[in-house]
Image 1 (tube, one colour):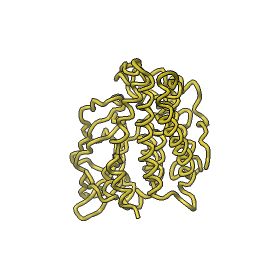
Image 2: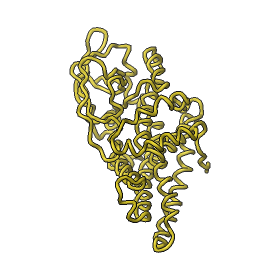
Image 3: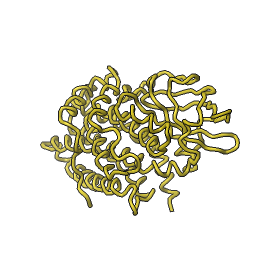
Image 4: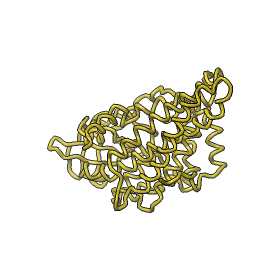
Length: 353
């Protein structure tokens, strides 16, 4: 198995900056967007896109991991943004090629509104948006129940279906006429991620903004990266909490040593698997859906386990809401419900042949 190594290119001063602002973002002061200019300038927002074409998806996974260990709010926003980059790069249309440049620079944020599309493809849901063909394009209506990086100048990539059964992947600016962002969600630990619902009322989408009319084929192209980078986010949080728990195993806390040992072994295995699967994306022997789904499920479980160990070994200080241990414990509660949720992952794995 391959041993994970830290990301190339995530400069110490960038890590320090993310760490210095993690507490304020957790408290809802500011938004995770604040870091994107620096991330874009460092060339960290498009590594491996699309489909590990440059062989550097493991490096992108390392970047997401390291950010998640410092500030999950930023990591989650980076993951959502990076997936919008993936969709545009995979589409490779004239519109997508032009639109992706501002996302790579971090000047504009990307919104991934694809949860319903993945559920549709898996057979456990349906598309949220309806598309009506018009002269030269479509009109989209409906509500995305959850989207993140929802800023007035953000670019949304999402899916919609027509009454005739056509299924589309489209890109559209949130500034378009007919788009209304809902009230920002009051989230546990992730309130700075600009997450809300998004309503579309007869939003005009010209044909040039249609990225694909092959929903199944398009999702098959992008989902390996989707799951690899989500898993990286989970494992980045798990690793930092595991290291902090290790420091707290002395004295009476030695009773947690066996539990910690099991978690550490599972974490090391998951980290190695992450690198192996990231390397395999786009290769002659790509990772299977079962392998990717299994990693994503175990990574989220490990984050919950490791943050739980950290909070128990931290003692009373871990109960303080402004402590890093407390923040990581709260951040981990999001992972079992992030789409694909634990329930969906288990459902899909049960359906794998």
